[in-house]
Length: 164
Image 1 (tube, rainbow, N blue to C red):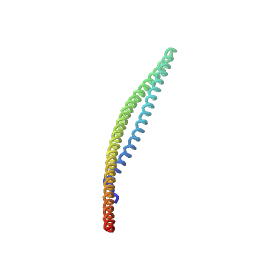
Image 2: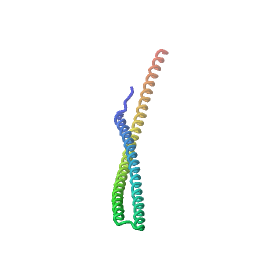
Image 3: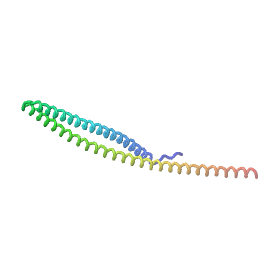
Image 4: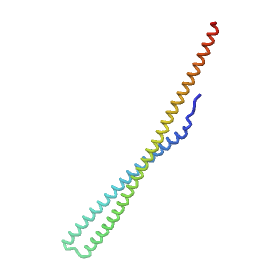
């Protein structure tokens, strides 16, 4: 007679939740890596824009020293102000990406905590199942021992009756 573990469905559900939590952690890690890569890309865009501003400013000063016409210097100034506006937009985008990265890291921390909790719950049920199995095995052994003892008593009584 084999007994079925009465919490088997709960244990299976806990294992399923643990697998789902592990998948969520993996997805969150990918999100963090993508957010970090985007943050680096945006920082590089800011650096490139600053480099263009520097080059344009040097060209403007060179033109001014060379006696360039006023309209040409105005064009440089307009171009510089456009570059500074673009730099400001890039800085704002970089800050927004930092917020997104922080959010992704927070989501990852929450997912890791959920995974740890799911593992803890699974381990608790696993230990319960193991102790239940040990108890059932012990009870079965006791039952078998009792049956064997009863058979031994009956056989002994039969031998004694035939001997007398």
